[in-house]
Image (cartoon, rainbow, N blue to C red; front, side, top):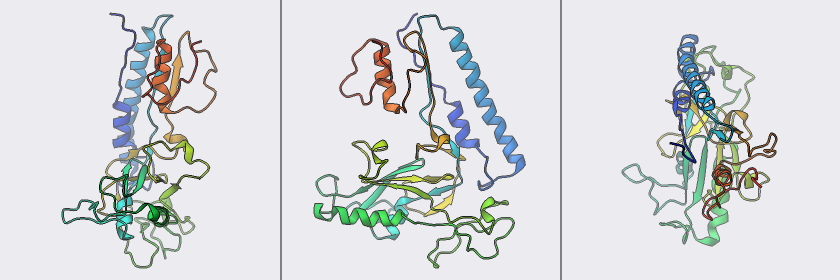
Length: 307
């Protein structure tokens, strides 16, 4: 059998890094013993990937092309945030008796995944159960932005931090108690530790780098979590320790979150890829290599030309 196109999906690196990427003292369960144990699983996943890629490249002939693609990078995480809980606290989101978002009374809600979240104004005429009038849209959006801007959750002003298990999660309103403490010595327990805003980026249309993360389905506000944080879409608690240890998505400027692309073959000259590309460019590039027209519904563009 000689197929024109063969896909192979290798999930083990992603699986192991989500579960075992224990690298930072701020992560729950951080001890030298735990780090060494979990690092063995991570090393195994990369070794298996290397062997698999080696077998594939050994079987290629002179006319074959190989695209090795990851859809994201990963970085260590320690805390799960809830944008919807913040919106509820601000009075912009309502929860029903079953703990679900009550869209008939909610002005703003967030859809979160990994380290990024899309925040939508519940606009009449656009959303299924919209309640915000078009003339109120900009004011409601600005109100939602303020919820996430300057939302500091750690400050060096915490008095007398302990050398171990320091209380680092404390909302700076003067009203909220400590949410939890890290179980081991942490770099965040130092007196000179900086104030930390977990919502590192709050993007809206008109900002210089907004175009790089926007598409037709993007939220009215885009949130990107700071290193060490991910986001969920429930509204149970504002911040809590994570169960998984690695996550992805978010700010593409962070090198640890960037995906990789390796491409080789007779139609791909060295140095052809000169600019940053998008994941949506992979499919058009495959169509191009196969000599096929890219369908209109496919986003992106070929990252090289076969002509």
